[in-house]
Length: 191
Image (cartoon, rainbow, N blue to C red; front, top):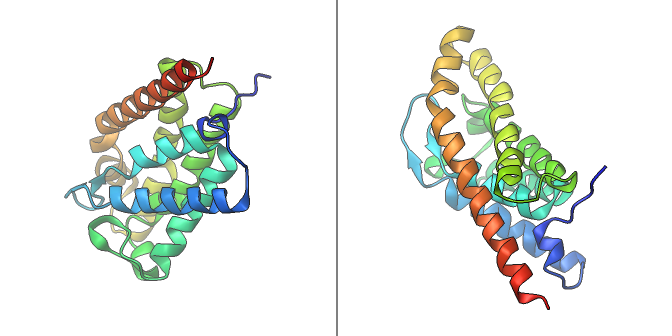
């Protein structure tokens, strides 16, 4: 099995608790800010959150990416306006987007895991490492939407998954290009 080092670990520096906490804080703020860039759609808005989550997974690795998204959810549950449109609180998390919010943790973790398992060699592999978890995010998202709304499963898929597929491809490609470029820049700096 190929084992790869996530970008943030390859940058070097001390692997201290303070550094990890700073990364978690930065990542959770990035996800919260990306949630505010939104295209209003009903019942699930399209935001840049999944782009930010892909970037975190592609650069942090599985555990740190998962913890970062847990921190993001904790911030929102505590009332900080980090969800789409500045929403917050447990009631919002139990609403139509709840499955996506919970799925964010798995998406970040799986993206990081795929990178750690070798899908980190060039833009094509990075794209797959971002796209596969982004696609799987629709499983808990649509099932939750189906469970908490009057939509039947087909309409939940049509409302909560189909309109977002092109955006998912584009966001995965952008994340892969950004991280691939960062790797190229890092390699060019090292003797």
